[in-house]
Image (cartoon, rainbow, N blue to C red; front, side, top):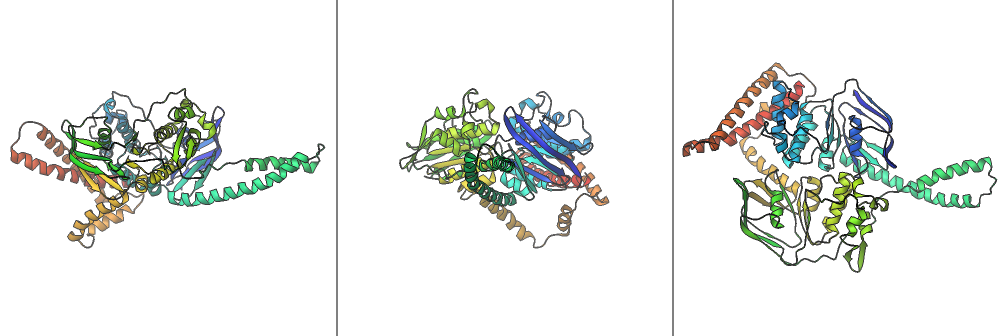
Length: 593
């Protein structure tokens, strides 16, 4: 494997706060590395340092000559007046790269390439930035939270894209499915040190537990010995001999080990002081549309007591709007929500909460309540509650302005839960939360004796927490599915498989060839493939032109019923054909690259 980067004894601090100290690792061709750590421990800072966007205190970064690095920042910035296409190429790009840009942007649901960047949402801008990194085909991809703002279809596509070929990748993400399927090395930043595990996320979890058990045993042994040595230090005579000095130095080293902490929670946070009546809410044939975009159409649903529901669907299908309608934050066009008298909503929104920057963390929570009633005569103080969500006593007295983005999201979550609601409504709660916080939140929701609605693209989280799904398909179509996300995907796969089984029993020669082609790495196109590649470019261009023509005709002057029917039938056929040819074009372009 060709070495790309060698990081030697890297140290970075902000004032008195040390993020990491003397960490060393290397990145070689073909390695797909995922970095995991608590919020605020320096993951994004490390990526920024490696890509040359931020300085460091000491150490060295040695890079392969002329190494091409593609960097996806957590909050990318663009010229608001340039178009989507210009934002990808900075006004330059040959025809082949432009065509490739169109295919990738289409996969990421960015369809209007002439649209000014100022008209795009923050999520859409992040997707343009991701497309930009992929289009440039760098030797090393450095990605900070690439799955944020992607819907499930896009995440599955990106998984496949990054797993194909011999790509080299350094990535920060909290999506555990994504880490498991894409990465072959996991690196963990923990208490200013770096630990490396050569395997996927499942392997990391197994080996990390072994490391934690060994550390616990080491600390326990050190504590026992420390007590004996401390007694010797206290009664040691003033005139210290040569042996005594060695023993004294050993004592201070032992003290460091004994004082090491493993941050773990001693209990699951189980609230028993939550009551909710038998009547929760009933959607009584509710409807909502924005112009021609239908979100809900005569939708009926009766929500059951203690139900834990997940809401999934592509971006723009109305998931967040449904929640805002339920909470009365937006008005219905028709129908009504009949909500039970005992229901007390706790709402965690995508937008988050604006805190006073000059406030301390503990005061944010104390302003809500001094303690939370856990039932059975037990109370948890604001400080104890924050500690459970891994805000240490020292961190609780930090000012809000010192917190990382992930720490602010965690504080917002604590502020919602501290109100002790009996119905939690969580809109994308997993964005920017570290894996340990996600595990704590999962446990809390599993034990929660009230009702829960979760909108999330985190498949692992949804599988752990929900037992029922509403699948928003767009155009007001909503599927009610009794199960979690993985069960829904399995059901979908079975639905797709049944027609195929009827059509054919064994794969055709062309399918066998396609399967074999996906297993080939780093080779040149054959003459036949090169011809196919060139033809695909022409086909895709023709299909896109035909699609644009039909869409313009349907939106334009009046057409006969027969013409509208014919065009309406042709449009989905065109879309399917374009998707198939696009995927094949991308496969061949990767071999060519």
